[in-house]
Image (cartoon, rainbow, N blue to C red; front, side):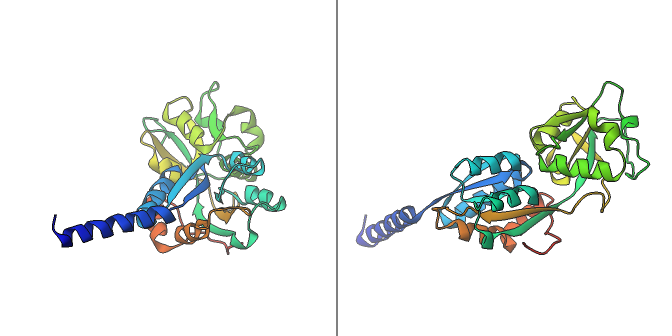
Length: 260
């Protein structure tokens, strides 16, 4: 190896060593509905920065409770405002970092081979008329899962909650509700549009009308005591155009409300 090549090789090793020395692990707790989009976004960010993004996905409520119990998260992305508010009330987020990052919509799905076709949801829709007496409607648990909370709000607004409450298959998160429909274990499901978009074996037969539930926005914030100096940079990148293109690929929209 001649001197020039040796020098180039040494410089490359030095650059790699420097990058490794400054590389950082950043842990993101994100709502289950973000699994595919955030995985791709994290891979892109890692390739550009050399930092490692650790992802933990679950129901927003589960993640918020884990953070409150001391789980080492640096960023938190919730599928609704409720659980971000809950952490803020406990003084666990950097309130000045809180911003709305994404928007979504709520849809009614069936297995892809279902005989049900497109319908319009309104206050005359009889959801139980769409399923057999022994069947249930898959949904995130309305007691704590954001998608289920939105579903309850929509069904209540439409005057249908009392009729369907006892006919729900309550899942631990929205992806679990999606899986019940994908496997044919439930003939109907209420999920986010983005979840339905990534599933192979379901189809959307209706979208819940605007005004039947609060606008679905995803807030993001840094955890107050994060030790990751790059957490703010990652959040800024997630709010930027490059990440926006990735999120749009998976069906997410821009938030329609002003950031908190």
